[in-house]
Length: 96
Image (cartoon, rainbow, N blue to C red; front, side, top):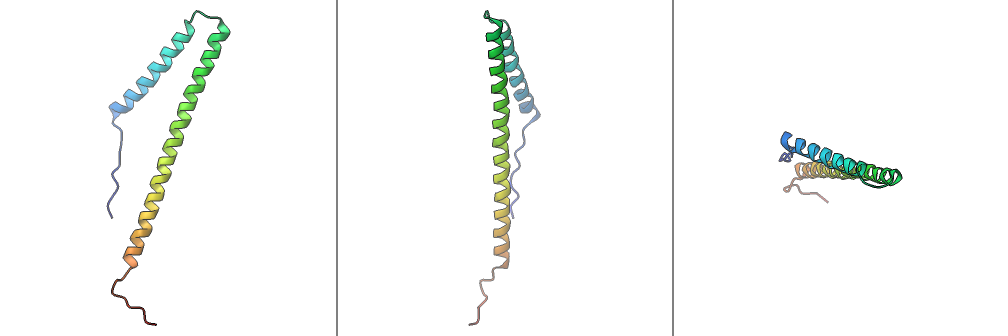
């Protein structure tokens, strides 16, 4: 049975993703804070930013969970196939 290739992210990619996210959220927060508008408009935009961030985290988790689920199902199917192939004897003759 072939071992599946495990994909892992590098530390540089992980750091870049965290920094990119932090810079984007910080820039939006500063932009909203210095916006020349009433405080209730800035508060509304801030809540909108929080909603987008939490939605992005939820979406990322759902996608990751679905990929993990598909990987487990694939491994179970592969194990069943391996078992069937191991038990199959092409030279066996079933007597009537």
